[in-house]
Length: 141
Image (cartoon, rainbow, N blue to C red):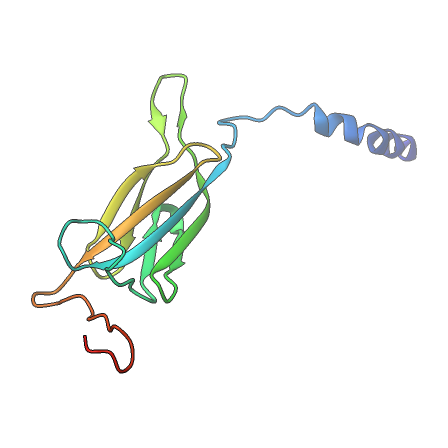
């Protein structure tokens, strides 16, 4: 008799798995964050084209998300939860990123399956200036 029940259970397993109900909140498709960490030389709170990226900066997000900036200060985070609205009309999906050790923080929202760009402009220390641009070898600057 147990052999017959085992065979029946194996035969019904695919149908039973498909009929299972999920309890709780349905998973939300994750989104993509593309960003840049820079030294904010002009103090405007944004990463300008002439402001240098901070290579190796560690970017921290909620839930353990971590990214390390490349040589130009660029970073990315994949599959962050997107914004959704509960039946009680409460919204979830806001995020914040912090550049470790600097106090620089940005908040943003991310749509399910969406993408967003985030600039993390780290305030420059007093007296810091943009690197001088050269006109090329042998050319007076």
